[in-house]
Image (cartoon, rainbow, N blue to C red; front, side, top):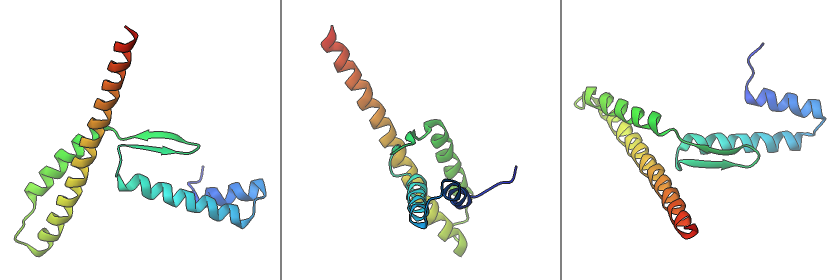
Amino acid sequence: MKARTVNQLIKEYCEEKQYGEEIEDMLSLYWSYTRKLMVKKEDPYIFLVGLGEFSINRKKLTKKIAQTYAYIDQLDKKDYTGIAKYTDLQLRLKTYKELLSKSYDVVNAKKEFKQKHSDKQD
């Protein structure tokens, strides 16, 4: 099987269904928006129409945070390239920490809602 990019798959799908260029452009735009949304990692849960809800894996995120801390400790901050990498890693680490805290906040809110709902039934 030959590996294909998403743009090739969209093009083949539109040719198969005999859709015009407008539909192909719309699908490409939707895919690029979706991809950018998932890469930004702003929210722990992302709902995509037609695909469902995607959640971030908290275990993998904590491993990523630990790896980032270890990498920051290895950097030579006195070197010019070390400073650039250090600031970039600090921003990325901040994003990861915020995402992890948002994720736990959502989980705790769901638990509280379930607890309140079960208390009302009793």
